[in-house]
Length: 329
Ligand code: TYM
Image 1 (tube, rainbow, N blue to C red):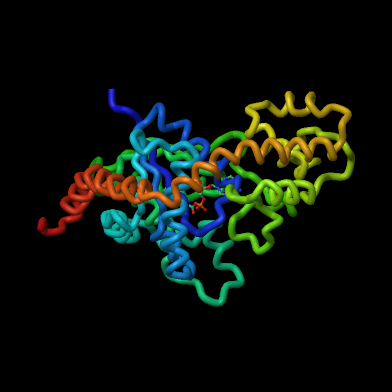
Image 2 (cartoon, rainbow, N blue to C red):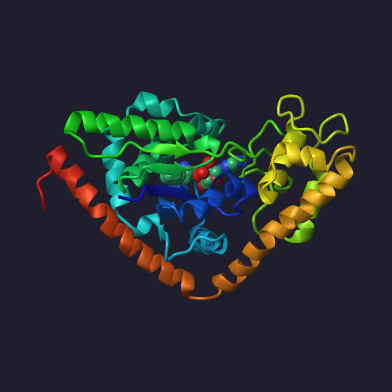
């Protein structure tokens, strides 16, 4: 039996947060044992907004190191940089010509990211077509992502079905894999807002590489709700429920268990313990990351990963070109 193919990507835009970790990366690590996985550093996506060249180069390599530090085994999963495999840009263009202007305009992430910006690149608008290309190139069955990528996944499915209907069976239509808990970790300063690495206020997020004391400080300052009860109720107590979700995900405890554990204790002890749980959860990753970043291991993984990815997607790209009517080179 063929193993399920899994593909996902993260943008190398610096400061990955525990939202990225709990919503996506943690599942990458889990899935590598049961599926044939590709995990990509999506630098082509990163340049849809301005990037400092040296910072982009550094962030891309750092993200690859973080994938491995978080537990992705490069002997099991394929780790690579998107721009190393030119098929992504090629199929990305082709799918821009399959996607409709109207449907791209309905993407809430585009609306959010372009709102009040003086300069909005065309790439930011067509971004989901490139994301569809990433996924469809590998006949992906499952895409582990956070809640905010759900709409892009639906568009990917529509594009795949449209192409298949028009040109004959070409792409597997992928399913999203969104965790029930942790699919949307919220800001520590405003529980109505998603935790985001691009937040202007560093107090809103915990970066995966934040120092223990920084983590403790951010959690002690995190907003809470009016009463003093550690109770899971996302509607009435969004801030505390978010902190509880983080606690539960780092300890593998259910919300009921977390409630019981902190019954009658109030926010103070809860926050203190939460900080230690996050610090303990991240410290082995941080340690491994520091070892990796100075070694050539990452570069070797990326070289091999790109080579493997190229081989894995060549057939699909050739099939697409032939079906479209391109003269074969
Ligand atoms: P990016 O780089 O913004 O985020 C990487 C992953 O982290 C998840 N995530 C969150 N999950 C829970 N709570 C949060 N607060 C939170 N913030 C971010 C995201 O949902 C994502 O899974 N377009 C994608 C990258 C991409 C991709 C792909 C993903 C490009 N091609 C193909 C899957 C398949 C993005 O910008 O993710």
